[in-house]
Image (cartoon, rainbow, N blue to C red; front, side, top):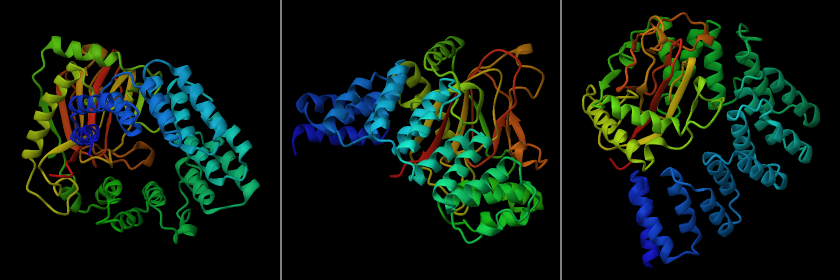
Length: 457
């Protein structure tokens, strides 16, 4: 094996360990030894992007060496936008989609770029693509999903109606119509809404069923759908709903699962006011979008796009190191292991960040109630918090736990809350419902992340 390939393997190993600085050093050395190697060029682009460095031109070079990898154009466009070259990123995706109208990931990326830029007609690329490929039912349903995620029910209905008019009713369109009927409230009270598709096995459909059953008072049916996923990886998405069903049924198992606020912990990290202000200034420079993604919980604010805590910026690296100490303490102080419990069953050795980002909320901003089914432990670290009258009367700005999404209309109260303070880190199970209360004025800026056990222990 050549020295360049050895360095490439080292870079991959260090990247897997989330040692971005070490991975960058190794991959740049490899690139000097083998400047024409396509995989090394791609590695340079990927690690540079994750490190928070300019990467758009690096992706351009990697794409030239790997012309069959259309996904690299998506990465290149994302990097362009991250560097403030929004028009170039949008134009690039438009160009690639003109040649590849059925490229669904490209459409989704372009829709995201346009939505976060505040473009009301963010999904228009799909219309041109369907004109080019009218028989592509999957393309039409991808269009539907983008609009349904944005809760544009009228446009979503039209997409399905047009798809069925052109190509006939298919299972995907039937499920889409049921989703709209339930989530829009149009048929939220119909207890038999999903009975016609009882034979269909689909995780997304089961989540829609659970939400519909809870909303309509069919709590036992909701519970039974959740329980059917016990022991499967998808169960992480159903634990939060099973918690609600158990609470509504008065089942004592909810104490085993949630235990109130037992597993919600706050740590006041050792940051000086000057350090927090420096961190705030760094984060403000990363909030370049105008609106959040539709699939996010952010309301009235923005969220950053790259893996925040993998950046090599020394200010962020300092914050990461202090956060890691608190995470280690949280894990070490968890209750005894329980092989059936979503939080307590996991190994407690090394850990990784499954995602990390910053959220900046404007006056009146908040997080809708949600969970993090891809995580094990989730978080909020407060960098800036409105003070005094700017925050508003309690519980303004608080991070509340256990209350269900309000659209389910279940009437359950939160278990409790964490009061925000600059320098405070809240850690909690990823399967626990959480959301924030709007505040009156000022800025609320946080770092958030999900933790997962290291696959190698």
